[in-house]
Length: 93
Image (cartoon, rainbow, N blue to C red; front, side):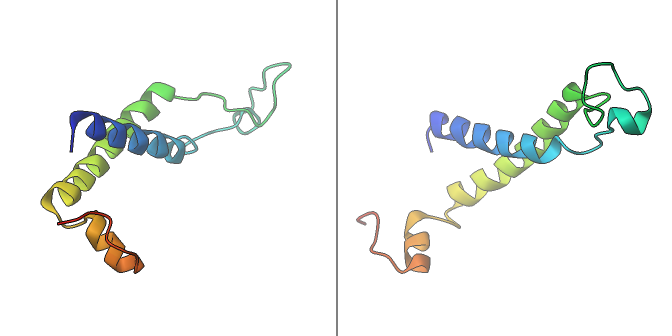
């Protein structure tokens, strides 16, 4: 894999992980009892975006290392996927 491919794979994993991590630990203003005038009562009282970015980075890095290991080691390739999906070979050997 090229460096650009590795970066793109990491970026995709990071964004998907971020959207999975964002709802964790969210406390609404109505739950906390401190509703700011003019805001939605269910809006987060404190987003903790820096903490969530760090958690996302740690989780995404672990997933990315596993994905890179699987791809680079040859445990998963386009040919294996083609055989699994019963389609013609994607690359010529």
